[in-house]
Length: 420
Length: 149
Image 1 (cartoon, rainbow over the protein chains, first blue to last red):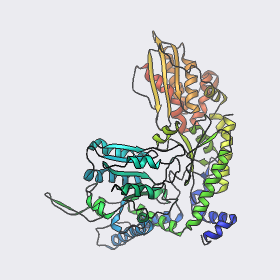
Image 2 (cartoon, each protein chain N blue to C red; image 1 turned 180 degrees about the vertical axis):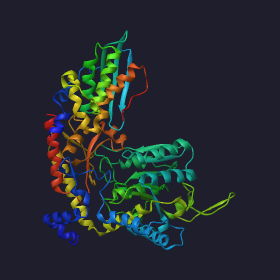
Image 3 (cartoon, each protein chain N blue to C red; image 1 turned 90 degrees about the vertical axis):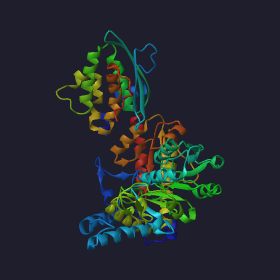
Image 4 (cartoon, helix red, strand yellow; image 1 turned 180 degrees about the horizontal axis):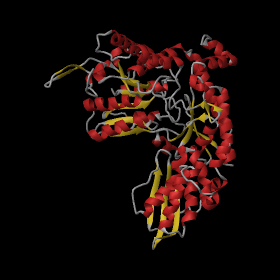
């Protein structure tokens, strides 16, 4: 990590050494599965956690455990400071204007549900439209469907082309005076496509339509700058960014969050309560009812420290080289078809092999210690678009190596042996 | 690889490649869908039952090798069997793939024995069982889509 990106760009050995150094921070990577060294290529489902995240969470429970925002005692003050410190870290990490714009949630799914529910109640009515793309994860489809069902609005879908890219002209054509909000994946979980969200946001803004970006798959691969993107909402999950499960963030522009009603009611989100009238708390607490996932929040903070410590030029070079190596090698295996060949991709290669069902491939790879995801990846409309029931998905993180890609390729040849 | 060979027996691979009784049956007296949405395994099972005897059985659909071979082998075993015999075989199969079957030699199991390896792969038990559960419900004259997930 001390090596500069420029040096790494020029030197394959330096990149290798950099990766091996990173791997030392992830104890689980030493595990064995079916007597084989674990090859973890299911990072789009969840990434592994570095030692620093594990010890931050354990340290909280061992030394600081107490409830936040209410106690006058020492532990509560310390825990509150640690938890709120993470909010500030997040603000800075994604370049939000104020900590009031950083709402802690359980994850990306809850973030999108919060917006669909709260923004929906304030601004969406019968006859209105919600626009999403054809490559969304179920969590960026179903909350909007529920909203449409509730209000009588309708869900519009901007189609994708054969490469797995949003057809921008079609997207633009679907924006109109009835469109109330747009929901878009920054990076597709099933195809790996990096969408040109900045441009798409700009197109929506020309019609004064706010845009929610589902950043679940972008978090681990891209540096996110919400003010540069000018998105209105941005959703992230810590567990896909080397942090723990059960915590994520909804970024929202202050002006919008202020105009939205609370999502859930309870403690912490109120200023005063009588049976006649409740006064809600300020942002972001208005949207944070109940005791949050405190240990997970603190773990998220450690994950952000880990991400901040990375040389991002090296991350980009390394992850692209893994993707390229995997894609090239897979293409050269007779019978393999890569699903999703967008010009800009991050972290994910999805494929099918002749008529061998992905679950059979997954089982055989598992016997080799290789963890991949098989199935529809919670993106059934994407599978339908390509006329396939499922794919095998290998997804990468900073700690993956070229040797692991080679293991995957050997595994695919083993599948071919079994299914000669 | 020894474990894998236990799962992907020749019989299973062969039935996956050339599934038997893999067709629609317009004259079926029972027809039922088996669908595991998470996996994507999706079949329709056709039964022609006359006087409590399965005089014909077929299936169509798509899914993994284990689910397809299991459905194919099942159709070859059940043709001509009574409902009671089919249910008994279903129970044997269920115990076999969940690793609970005791005191039965592979000879008496016949073709079912090919599925003994499934019990070592807990994630795949639902694949192997889908067609059998669908058959069981069809015999019971149930009409809801069957899932083993």
